[in-house]
Image 1 (tube, rainbow, N blue to C red):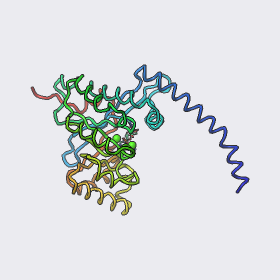
Image 2 (image 1 turned 90 degrees about the horizontal axis):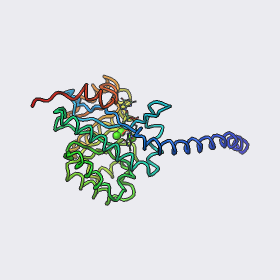
Image 3 (image 1 turned 120 degrees about the horizontal axis):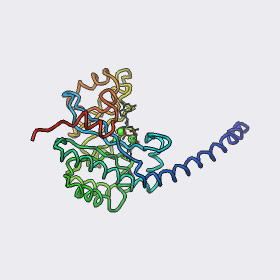
Image 4 (image 1 turned 135 degrees about the horizontal axis):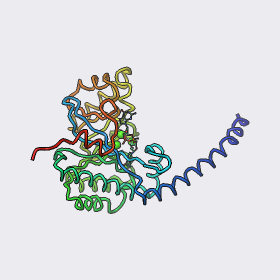
Length: 281
Ligand code: C2E
Ligand code: CA
Ligand code: CA
Ligand code: CA
């Protein structure tokens, strides 16, 4: 056992150096790409399962790299979230989303009941002036909070729950709603559900994947739905890919779905083309 540990170590070391290099490169790349505005957002529609109508959209970050093409969040988001860069990048993304909403409102193509959801990471919530920054973006584009939703994970409230709850309430007073993202994947989802003033839960894709074939997963999703309904929370099933999953979920009332079955994340232009109707008046 000892010998194989040594062998592992020899194999591991160059890999570690490579990883360190990759991260250093990523860091300098990210700083310059932020200046060049290479971070953009895509929009994935959120659909009412029963009416099949659009009820919202989630903004998802993309990195338009001049050499590598479009880079997906899996490759850079945890790095971004673990550096201070998430604050300026997150704020710029919020600004871009609000600019998009303003543009389509002015064109009479953004329904009042529509919300765009933006992912907010832990470090953003700990910024002492997070609330002030969000409100000034809304003011800049003359928008009500009711066109936005913030998606947070329970990790976001791990360290200073009272402070986070206080900020959430201030933003809710302005009309912004909150969704608890990746529900069920953390180690204490229920206790956060009890303490965080959220309006919606998003059941993680990992629970949805096998609902039609794994009775345990089905039982868990059924229980999550029952809890959420008793708490008057809106329920989103994430990562719905098949008709069978949609069929299974449709035994419950009021479920919203987000997933490839309905549509993938789209560029804002394509999203507007396909989903934002010409409104009368
Ligand atoms: P998330 O917030 O849970 O977002 C949902 C992810 O699931 C998105 O991946 C979306 O494209 C993907 N997805 C949706 N439907 C399906 C489906 O039917 N099948 C499969 N296989 N995937 C589906 P994406 O865009 O790669 O984002 C990954 C994660 O990166 C997000 O997970 C979120 O945690 C993070 N992220 C994305 N944008 C932002 C952002 O602007 N700020 C922050 N802080 N995090 C972000
Ligand atoms: Ca999300
Ligand atoms: Ca999620
Ligand atoms: Ca996530």
